[in-house]
Structure formats: C-alpha cells, structure tokens
Length: 257
Image (cartoon, rainbow, N blue to C red; front, side, top):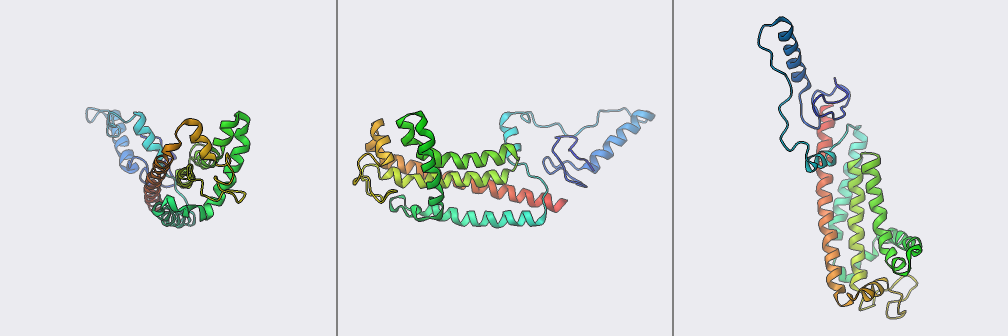
C-alpha cells in the first residue's frame, strides 16, 4: 500500500497493512485522510487537520532514535528467517556454555573460537607494531577485539542488518571472555602460549605480564581478569536479549506480510 510509512517514514514491505515500526494502520489512516479531504471540499463539517496521534515529546530524542534504529527489522523470506532462528539458538546454547566456564581453568582456550581469535590476535601484533613496542604487545588483544567489532559495525552501518550486528557483538563478548584467562595468568605465567612455552619459561613473552608490569598493575591481574570476564558475560546476555527481540519483531513483520 505504501513504500514508506506516512508517519514515521519507515520502509514497508509490499502490500503491508500496518507499519512494522510504529504500528500505524494504513487503511484507517487513509480513510481519515479521505474523509478530511471530503469535508474540506464540501464544507459539511469544520475541518480539523487529520494526522496520526501526536508523537511523544521525546520522540526525536537521541535515545529514542537509537532505540528505533536498533530495533528496526525488514521483511524477509521464510528460509532466511528460520536460518536466523537456528543460528540464534546455536549462539544461545554456546553463549551459556561460555558464561558458565571458570576463567581460572582456561577451558575457553580449548574452544574452536579461541583458534579463530588467535589468528586476529597474532595479526594485531604485526599491525600495531607500527605504533611502538607497547602497542605491539597490546595489539594482540586489540586485534582479536577489533575484528568482531568491525563485523558488527559493517552489518549495522553498511547493511542496516541489526541481527547480523548482534552476531558480531556476540563474538566480541566471547572474545572478551577469551582474553580473561590470559590476563589472569600474568603473574603466574603458567599458561602454555603459542610456541609451546609458558610465561615462566620465556620472560618477556607473556603479553599481559608485559602490559600490566609496565603500567604498574601486575598485582591486580586477577581482579582485572574477573572484571573483563564479567563484562563479556553481561554483554553476551544483553546481545542475546537483543537478538531475541529482533527475531520476535521479524516474526511479526513476516506474519503481517
């Protein structure tokens, strides 16, 4: 009926009867507009401007616009929708598994994603070495954190795909938790590192021993590790909640098409 909602300007699917973003019933709105035009032409009643209900006062606030942007979904075919549902269920189960791990055990280091993170970790050392030795050491952690953020940003900004962005942020939260055991080992130096040595075997080889030592924070390695692990866990819960809401809204849009 409309390619864009006449009220909120959100893009609409073909033959949609109701706006997926603001809920406006297009048939009722059109009827009101036609009635207003008829009354204006023939003077049957005093004409009052016909419009949608007045938006809330904070409709144009940054928080409201951000919420509208992050919750926007578009019509899609059934195959793509159910593929997203299956992906979400897999991430939900996998996410709960990561959240339940004890960072002191480094069980997360045995996961498939740890090997994926490791690729970008090592690449980060090379890339950030251009900015000095401190950034070379820190670049490993930055590399494995920036890559999922780039994925999330590409989906969100370039493609307008909120669900894809939620998957990218899920990966980012997992990568945060993946960093925690390494930080926790800064003083102990017991973890087996790339190359088959530990921090005790090769002084100066352990990233976080170097970083926290230079910053005078080595005594706080375990506190920092637990804080990073908690941040990753909380972010993963938020991302899973976001993804669930998006799928629910997607289901409603597909149902109404």
